[in-house]
Length: 337
Image (tube, rainbow, N blue to C red; front, side):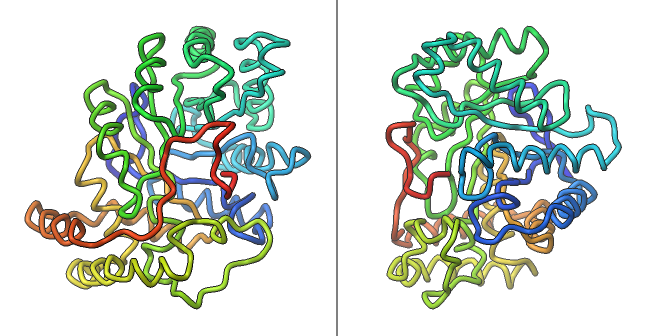
């Protein structure tokens, strides 16, 4: 698979969002099945794996680190040199903890706990999962710079943030990547975030690039999602009326999928890869077959003419449902990602 840069980190142009092995899509698979899926992803060319301390069943505090442990075990089973893959994980930073310990020490403690669960000596990329308005992002950036100096991380990032926050952080210590929601039905980041990041050498890592499955073409207004721990019950585009309203976009994807002998999901990923050189999507799934399908989107190459036709047709479609990307610890999506 071709590679791209997130700051100075070189990664496969499509990564793997590992959350679904622990949370977010209903019943989770057993550990062995999850590890098998991660290994299959690596064999298919993926070198970039995204996890977080929070990812565990129902996001309960007692389940913290569930996903990191799975990713760590998979990488250990892989048995390749550490430099051959890139691991991203994330932390939430509570106000009381930062005040009691200081921002640097609090972040460092979270990181060391993550590294213990991952069974690794360093994390390639460490994100602040959500901005805490009580804690200046400049202090977070300074702390992250110290952790880079200690070789505990190689780069750092922010998630669900606007340009104003990215700029404040980047001015203190260079940001490697911004992980915001981005897909054909969530395009707010195209206005300012992606252009700013492109100009400043920052990678953009879209989560939910297939809109929680909507852009796969497999979800209909009659689709029922699991009742327990399934964020798809809360995703705006997956409300029944919005599934119906967004059908023209799905029809468009099916049209191009037929032309390219691909799937709608692959077309949606190929579209963003063609559009921006600094974008590295991390589609997530708990299903090995779906993971491999998504990774094969790297083999779907749109010509400039095809891209322009797709872009024009997409611009004529009305988008139904909206989440947005400006979130914080005090202003969070109901799905609690």
